[in-house]
Image (cartoon, rainbow, N blue to C red):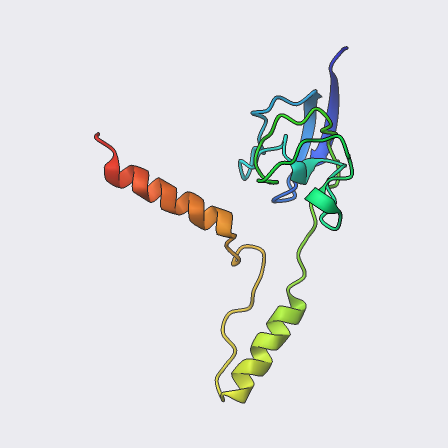
Amino acid sequence: MGSQNIDLQCWKCGTELKRLILPFSRYEECSTCKADLHACMQCRNYKAAVADACTEDRADFVLDKDKANFCDFFKPNKHAYKAKDYAAANEARSKLAAIFGEEASDTLNESSVVSPQSEADQALAELQRLFDDD
């Protein structure tokens, strides 16, 4: 089984990644945001609407869909990135602010939204910094 090259978008940030070598190592990550690439979110079998979010019935259950895994059914999705639409949320925020006679605060966008996982990663990093013996 020979290796081949592939171009794809990072599932998390949308960065165009060129000439990645297949098969991916479990440790392959995005050069921009450092997201794991051998993860469910980057796989063609990933579908949030199906059971276990995977269309492959034989695949083992993976809890953290955004973390690297050892799935033998992993097939890279070249277009896994889905831009988020914050228009409805921004409109609702503006209407709510108007009800209370306030000015609308900052609008939501991709960079202003913090995922729960990144908050957990930040908390872990802070704990490691506090208890580090160095």
